[in-house]
Image (cartoon, rainbow, N blue to C red; front, side):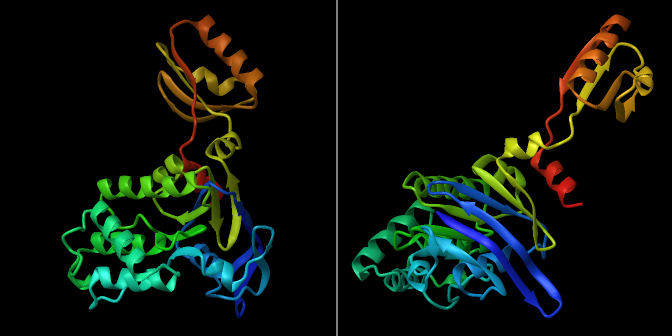
Amino acid sequence: MLEVKDLTRSYGDVLAADGISFEVAPGHMVGFVGGNGAGKTTTMRMIMGVLAPTSGEVRWQGAPATAQDRSRFGYMPEERGLYPKQPVLGQLVYLGQLHGMSATAARSTATELLGRFGLGDRLTSKVETLSLGNQQRAQIIASVLGDPVALILDEPFSGLDPAAVDQMSELLREHTARGVPVLFSSHQLELVDRLCDSIVVLHQGKVVARGTSEDLRGNAPLRYRLTATIDTGWVRGVPGVRVIDLDGPSVLLEPADEVVAERLLADAVARGGVREFSRIRPTLSEIYREVAA
């Protein structure tokens, strides 16, 4: 279990992180979302010990995280850390050794992963000669060397094509299947929604929402779409109903509760020609825009 408890980081009068708390359970994948400047990278740096918190703490397995604990975390920083003029495989072997692997084991694992990510023919290429997407692949490989006990990844899917996104997703699932907690940030909200067990939403340095996708959707306003064969303008006069959008025979509305929704449906049926009456589930993007407004 990785726990973040009331982490705060200030720069003078600016609070980059303001009392941030959440957990990443063993074998769970947590998506960290928020706009630019929301505090995601600052929080990840504090988790890794790169930045010292102004207050709060990071806990690992029920105790304050130590440098030794963090040395076993796989980390992908916002600023990619591979040396551009050094060969890919040589760097990965070196980084694997820093994580306690033997040179032989690091070379074998790195070679296997490079081949898996389509870089088997670029082992001796300098990083700067790779496309940005392939550099991202190599950086991902660097973060998972050394059998990490946790993964902290800042925008790991940035710049990846759809095939590489699928490969990366599979790699992360392999780690969660072994009980590794994974925290990653991303602006690709549909991807976060698809992959993650839970989501933490940051806005201006604060956690403004967290939970599973269903939890977040469950907290969203109750909305229905009514489509009929006649004009639905009459809905505007129904008590307990707020009309969001009305276009002739179709109306998007918010009933005060399910009882009001059922009464509205009965009224619509009595008027005749109901084609649709369906609950509208918001997307994660819509939820994010509401909680971060």
